[in-house]
Amino acid sequence: MSDAVINKINGTKVSPGIAIGKAYVLGKSNQQITGTLLNGPVEVQQEIVKFENAVINSIEEVEMIKSTLSANTVSLEILNVQIELLQDEQIKTDVMEMISLQYKNANDSVIEVVEASITILKNLNDDYLSARAADVQDAGNRILKHLNNDKPTGCQVLEEDTIIIAEDITPSEVIIMDISKVSGFATQAGGKTSHAAIVAKYRGIPAVVGCGTALAGIQTNDLIIVDGENGEIIVSPGTEVLNHYIEKKNDFLKQTLLLNELKDVKAITTDGVAITLLANISNAADMEASFAFGSEGCGLLRTELLFMNRTSFPNEEEQFEFYKGIALKAKGKPVIVRTLDIGGDKQLPYFDLPYEQNPFLGYRAIRICLDRKDIFKTQLAAILRASVFGDLKIMLPMISNILEIREAKMILQEVKSALTALQIKFQEDIQLGIMIEIPSAAVTADLLAKEVDFFSIGTNDLCQYTLAVDRLNEQVKHLYEPFNPGVLRLIQNVIEQGKKHNINTGMCGELAADVSATLLLLGMGLREFSMSATSIPYVKNLIKNTSITEAKEIHQHVMGLDNAEAIIHYLQESNKQ
Image 1 (cartoon, rainbow, N blue to C red):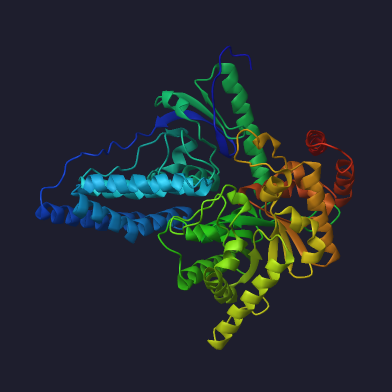
Image 2 (image 1 turned 90 degrees about the vertical axis):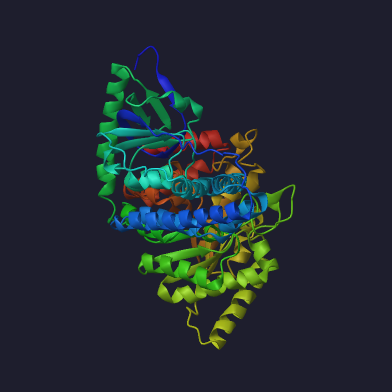
C-alpha cells in the first residue's frame, strides 16, 4: 500500500472481519433541560401524571417491538432489560421527588435522574457497567420521547453495505435497524461489552468502538473501511488501499466459512486427545448463543452481573429464576456458577463498601461472602434449588487459603440442611471448586486440591497479583504480561497438582482465548478452556491441527526461556509452522 495519505482512526476491536461501505451517521438526541419550574401543587400533580403516562406508553412501545421479533434472543434480552429499567422503583421515586419537592418539570427531572444514574455506572470503573449505562440512557430517551410527544424514530432506510457511525448506539437503535444491510459498526464511545459490540459479535459484523472524537469528522456517504482485525477505521481510502482491504476481506470470509464448519466438530488433537471448550457467560441469552460457536457448556457464569443495575440485592426467588433459566438453556451441559465477586473494581451502588486505598487487595469476593453470610446463603440456596434443572457447579472466587474453603463448605452444608428441612430438592453431590487467581493459592494448589472438586485458573487477576501490576494503570500496564515466566510457572504448578490429585483443572481467564498460548497450555496439560464464545472456533481450529506431542515440545522449550518477549516471539513463530 503506497497511497500517500491514509486517514486512519484507531479504536478498540470488538468483532473481527473487514467491512467496506458507505457511512451512515446516526444523529444524537437533542433533548435538553428547559429550566422551567412548576407553579404550585396543581402543576406538580399534572407533571407526575404526565411522567406516569410516559412510562406506561414506553413499556407498551417496547412490548410492541418485542412482539415483532422472532427468536432473536439477544434483542429480546436487551428489550427485557429496558422494561426492567422502565419499571425501576428507584428511578421512579427519584423523578417524582424531584417534581414534587424541587418543583422541576417532568422533562428536566427525567434528564437529571438519568444523567445521575449514568454517572454512577460509569464511575464504577467496570467495562460491563459502563456499557449498561446505554440501557439507562435508552430507557430515559424513550420516556422523554413520550413526555414531549416526539414522533417515533422509525427504522432508517439503509443501503446495502452500510457502515454505522455513531457517538454510541442505543439498544433500541440496534434492534429497529435493518441489520441485514449493516456491514460494520464504528462508535466514538463504548467498550467490549457495549450493545454495538454484543450485537456485532453475535451477528458476525466487523466493529470498532471507542474511537473517540476523531470519528465526528466522518460524513454520511463517506467511503469507510472497518478493520475489525486491527481495531482501525480507514476514511476515504485510495484505490490501492481499497484493493488491499478487498483482498483481506475475501481472505477473512474464506477463513470464517472454514471455522463455521467446526461448530459441531469435537476439539480433538491429531493424536486423539479430547479438549473441552466452554464459554464465559453473563446470562441465559449468552448461554444459548454460545452453542452457535461450538461451546460445550459454561466455564464461568459471572453472577455479580445479576446484582448490577439495581437498587437492592436480588432475593432468593429472583436469583433462583436467573440460575434456573441458564440451566435450562444449557440443556444438560455443565454450568460453572461463580459466587458473588464484588469489590475491587466492581461496586454495587446500594452496598456501601468502605473506602480502601488498595481495593483489589481488600474487602471483596469470598471475603465479603464469608463476612456477610446472609448474602452468601441466599445465593447458595438459589443455586442449589436451580441445580435440579441442569448440571450446575459452584465456584468460589479469590481464595487465598484453605481455611476460606473450609468455612465456605460449612456454610454450604448449612444451606443444604435448611433446604432438606423444607423438603426442597437440590443436587446433593453438586461439585464445589475454586478460582486460582491469587499466588498463594497457586503455590499451595497441592493443599487446596484435597478440599475441592475442581480448579479454574483466572489468569487476569493471577497475572496482576503475581506481577504487582494494576492492569488499569496506564503507567504500568505494559508490565502486565501473562507470558512472564513467573506467571507461567504458577499456572504449570496448578495444572500439575490438579492432575496429581485427580481433580479437573480449567482456565477461564483471557489467556484461555489467546491462540498464542493454546499450544503452550496444552503442553502443560490443560484440557479445559473457557472463553468468550466467539473465540472458540479459533482455538478449536488450532487444537485440531496439532498433537499433544508437539504441544509438549513447545512447553518444554518455553520453560527454558527467561523473559516474556522471547516466549511470545517463539510461540508466534510456532503457530506459523
